[in-house]
Image 1 (spheres, helix red, strand yellow):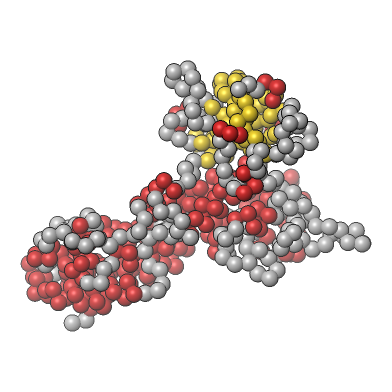
Image 2 (image 1 turned 30 degrees about the vertical axis):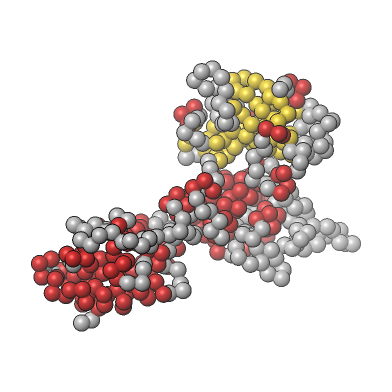
Length: 451
């Protein structure tokens, strides 16, 4: 009997009449429709929603009986209503993807998988002897990592992190790489618009790094992450995130001038140079947030996360509020890296042990450290601060500032690191207004610090 006809019969004919098709039909469906998925070197439609860590073939065993019992034992089969089996729901999740392009790209694979599994699940559920068998003695088939790791690798979770850590910094790249932020009707955008057109004419459409939406931007950036070329490092370098053009360019200076006083072509190989000049300092919070996001994507891609304890907190939210430390001691290293942690009051009148926010920067020649705050969104402090779609903000009030100095140069080796107790230099209590912008920064003096 033709397999598509078998699939149709199982779904459409009454349950009482399906038994005639018997075990043979289920086994034939499995061999002809499920095993090709298992044997295929190509990833399943799971890749539509996940960067890594899960594939439909992870749930398949060599035989129809073992695969069915394995799925049943994990609660992925609904014996009373096979059409509502969780394994089918997981395959259908791609239909709800907000990324229309990804949905179209994977539609054919997803539909074939759903059709095959639907027919096979119905056939197995109609076998009373099979469905009543005792649990498998051998291990069930499932991904090698726990659900927390699988969820962490979902593209919608990665996109949410991208919005907070990368998309939020896009105006540093205005106007050269942000065509969507240019308003031709705004007279103040006339020169930025002209500059953008000139750069696109000179260097091509690759100038348009930020697309019309965060999802489109992230997809475009990750599409070219794997390898560089003889003329350029990769935009997003998963092998070495610090060697991503996306962070090297904005932390590079203008190219040198030639004998005629004109700029040499910008370099996309070390040492890199940037026609936009310096837009971001190495070790400031923007750099730290972007590098941390790239490192997380690299860890997902390389499947380095084995358990929930391996996962990063992923709870950083950028603000426009600024904290400044002045009068740094001469004993601190020149151009040393400093982290400033903000602690809020707890219900007992003391201080939360974990910080509510932090910033990071390099000691300037004038003995200052400046930086925009990144807020940690945690359950402990969730209700104490303002959160909305436009960003986050600390509420005014009394807080404790703790200062840490990277004397051992840890942040050069691990830009995403948070310094600890051995780096602690002192603390000071302040009444903060937490207004926006560097001109309204909260300022503390290192002379005020006490241990």
